[in-house]
Length: 284
Image 1 (tube, rainbow, N blue to C red):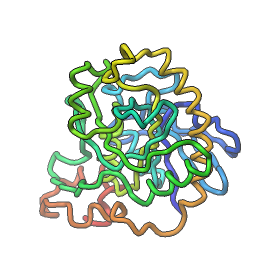
Image 2 (cartoon, rainbow, N blue to C red; image 1 turned 90 degrees about the vertical axis):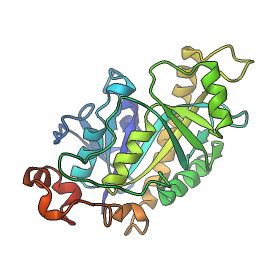
Image 3 (tube, rainbow, N blue to C red; image 1 turned 45 degrees about the vertical axis):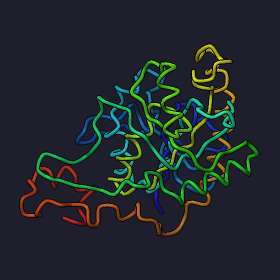
Image 4 (cartoon, rainbow, N blue to C red; image 1 turned 180 degrees about the vertical axis):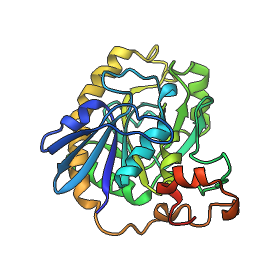
C-alpha cells in the first residue's frame, strides 16, 4: 500500500487523529526538501507531510525546491499527493471559503526548474490533463461530504509571484478562461507526473483577485483570515479522502514514463541512472 503525500501548510500535520508521528530528514539528488517531512498514520493509511514553505513560512514560491519535495515523497513510496494551496478567485461564483479541484493549468512562471530530467536523459511526458482525475474525484467527493461548497473543475493560473497580479493581468487571465490563480501548483503537478505519482490540488479560495472592482485590491489580512478558516476544513477533507486511496492505481499517472524516455538506454550516463533510479529504474 502506497504512502499518501500531502504538501501544504505546516499546520496540516497537526490534524486530529494523526498517530505514530515521526519526523524524517530527507536528502535527494536535487538537495533537501523545504523542511523535515512529518509522517504519521490516519484512518489506517500512512501519510507524509511536506511543509511547502518550511516551518514558519520562510520560503517564497520561487525559492521552493519543488524537485526535492516531490523526489523525497517518491523515495518514501508515495503513490498519491494532495497539494493544499491558497488561491485567488477569478470568477464571481467561486467565493472566498469555497474549494476548487482544478483540472487544468496555465503556466506563468519564469524562474523555476520544471523537470527531473536532462544531463544526458531526455523525457517527454504527456501533460494534456495535468491533474489525476481519479484523485480529483475523490477529493471532490470528500469536500462534499464535509459540507463545504466545491467546484469540481477549473483552470488554475500559476504565476511567479511573490507579488499579486496587476489589475490588467487579472482581467487578462479571466479572458483566457482561467478560474483561480496561485503560485505553486504547476511545478508540483509536472514533477509528480514525471515521478508517476497521482497528483491533485485542493485549492482554497481566499479572496477575489483584483479584477473585481468592488474589492480595491487583495488585502493580505483578509486572505489570512479566510485561510485560517479553510485550514480546518482542509484537514477534514484529507481525513475523509485518504481511506478511499487504496488498491492498484488504474490511471495513466502510474505509467507516465512508460513510453516517455526518448534517450537510447545505452547513452544514459551511469551517474544519472544511479541518481534517478527511484524514478526510472523499472524502465532503464
